[in-house]
Amino acid sequence: CRYFVRHHSEALTPKPVNDVYAEFIQQRTKAGLSGRYIEDLRYMLGAFSKGFVCDINQITPDQVELWLDALGLSARSHNNHLRGLNTFFNFAKVRKYLSKEFDPLEGVLRKKEKAGRVTVFNEKELALLLDNASKKHPDYLASLVLGAFAGFRQSEIGRLSWEDIERIPGFVEAEASKTKTQRRRLVEIKPVLAKWLALCPRKSLMVWPHSTPSLNEVRAENAEQVKVKWQ
View 1: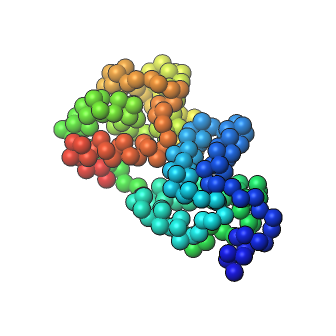
View 2: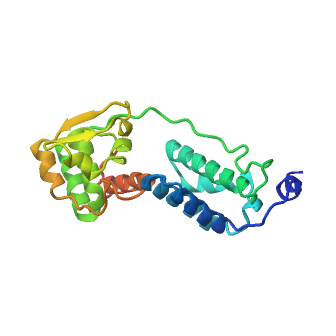
């Protein structure tokens, strides 16, 4: 029955996953969506398109679930991937590459996200993290120091631009749209933060120039390399 729905319920155009992915990214880019959002989609769906070398209407929920489980994602990342895939499949349905009556995510459950804990490092641990980041993960250094010395959450750091740091001398200004509380934040740049920010490379308009999921990966890798536990 599912096979019939996937292939015969309406006139569908067979299309490889990778081709649908390319069209999807092109359409989202033309729509003027943010660079950070597009980068996140590339990160998640690019890997998905490489993992499924077949037409998009050949994919089953069991295959999607196995692919997600193999990634070993946190609950939040798992749910973010599900949202990205849902948007991707809906695009395919509009383009008639996938039947509107078939859901490739049927039965693939969201995971319960735990309330985040504030991680506090002692002086030695922070010194190790900073030293390692400056040597091995320079793109990550600004994100680390903004969290350590200005109290910004990782989700907020992912939205900050260098303009937010330079707009008001001596302060980081985070607009309401970039904060968890949806309120504008003005955080003083203390001398120690200013010192570290001066050492940070600027390869993009954004403080973190890559995708949001990759920020999680680098943060974990940096901590693991110096044997510091990140809660």
